[in-house]
Image (cartoon, rainbow, N blue to C red; front, side):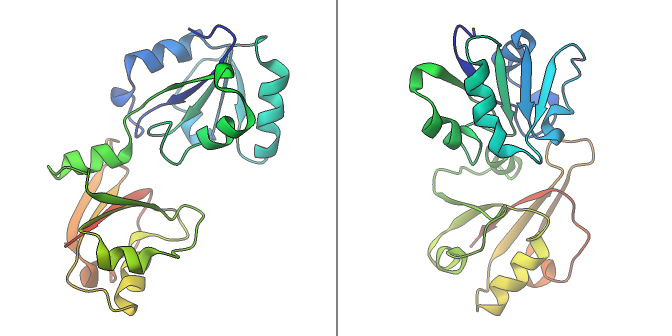
Length: 208
């Protein structure tokens, strides 16, 4: 499976039940696993080398270049490898022949499945480490929005921000710990959501 390539592998939304068989096979074949600590913690392979993203992300590309063809390297990313992941950085640093991509089930797909709706008409926005520059415009013009959130921009803060900018009459679906045993899904409106607090890892859908 590896040949002389590095594998960029989408590991799904979190629960191992959503890990695709082809991804599991590639992970088992790898000599070295790279990724965020939260992602790698799902895979207990004591004999495999592990390289964590945290703290030295600028060293990842040089590490891959120095070991390409020598080690079977698997870069593990949450969700789908092609959706707000490390794939963009890899594709700019390497030739297409040097890497291969294995898709995963994204939290976007799972969230819309949970509410029984399609997502081909949804606007996808990441607020993970980003400022909400186009959020108001998209909220006005989009029937559905899917938001990737982080601890600095949790659901209640998004709701307050939208309300302060005059966005009203919107449904909000918050997906906390999506796919895990302690999963929690909240269906409400922006006003009620703005009064809530204490959320953990979340993604969010906003719709008319």
